[in-house]
Image (cartoon, rainbow, N blue to C red):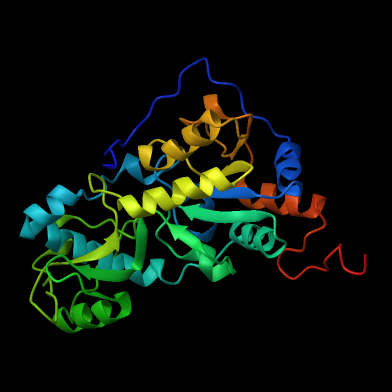
Amino acid sequence: MRMRPTLSWTPTDDLPPGSTDPAPVADALSGGRVLVLSGAGLSTESGIPDYRGEGGSLSRHTPMTFQDFTGSLQARRRYWARSHLGWRTFGRALPNAGHRAVAAFGRHGLLTGVITQNVDGLHQAAGSEGVVELHGSLDRVICLSCGTLSPRRELARRLTAANPDFAPVAAGINPDGDADLDDEQVGDFRVVDCALCGGVLKPDVVFFGENVPPARVEYCRALVRAAASLLVLGSSLTVMSGLRFVRQAADAGKPVLIVNRDPTRGDRHAVTRVALPLGAALTGVAGQLGIAVDGAPDATAGR
């Protein structure tokens, strides 16, 4: 299935209002078998902006499309210059309370899995296991000719060697790890090719307009089938790659719960949308369940 390059979505007046009561989320988690679907909003408290929330990057930045990347050397030069600079900041981001709460829910056996639309690796850094990276990860690079995967740190070393004087100041960082640079700042940035075959290198992420691998989609659908409920965290669900799992769960009669401050494209399929900041909401839910986050004493100990 092709990931639709939909960059915006306008809420309609008939969407149910958001709630400030996270009790339904706690109730769902207490029953177990919850599948988490996370989006960029979960990582904003780690210093990575989202696409569409208040101050979202789409107000100033259009993400690279697969067609532009593969069709233009200049587009690849611009992408890799911006991404190389952004990686220095992006790679230093740390998990926030929301990521740690999700990891704690998993450790207590309340989750059947985590699907993330994010490419930042912060779920895994927080301790979550078996995370499905729906859109891939920025810490890997793939050759479009020979298919070889290699670590991003190796590419970063090669790009630094090829561009020793490249040190512009970015106006900001985006959810895809892309720094805000203008064409003058990009200049004549040198792109490097695959060290094995000389092919074009691309981050191992799904660009807008690119296919999410069918096997990955089907695996996620199987996770939805196995879950009792679906918990969406920090996603506007604008793109079909995530929305399809919300629709699948709702069509199967499984409760969909959303924690996102702004309305989402999936609200009409949800039993509730909790309009609270992710970190505070999930930490509060963990407290209601007696689950420790951030090393606090576990209220269930000794029971």
